[in-house]
Length: 137
Image (tube, rainbow, N blue to C red):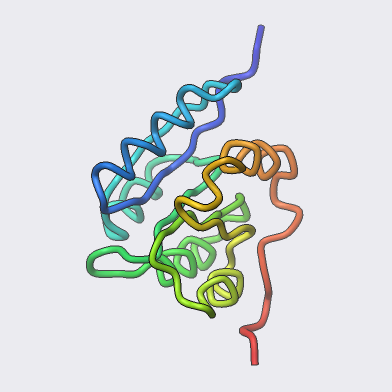
């Protein structure tokens, strides 16, 4: 009997980007199970009811940005991998994402070719590293 497919939460406010991420994950070699929402508040609500194996977050979300969402997921005790996959990034966003508790930071569309490989690596590595413990100076 095979293990169940890993459960991934995608948090992306742009409908087209959200559908693209879902498509990539559902059609990957591992055929991941994906739940997707458009806001940080929705993500926290669904996270309270499910046990996710990986989180894929956008930075620019309505109401609560991805950095705050990442911090809140960590504050609630999750050690599961978190990756940012976002467009319109600023020079320090990678540093802020890792400081918030993310394991990885990819840029759309530049890193599209390594997206599924990165997801697979993070799931394989599990929770060995949950990002920086202290904010950068």
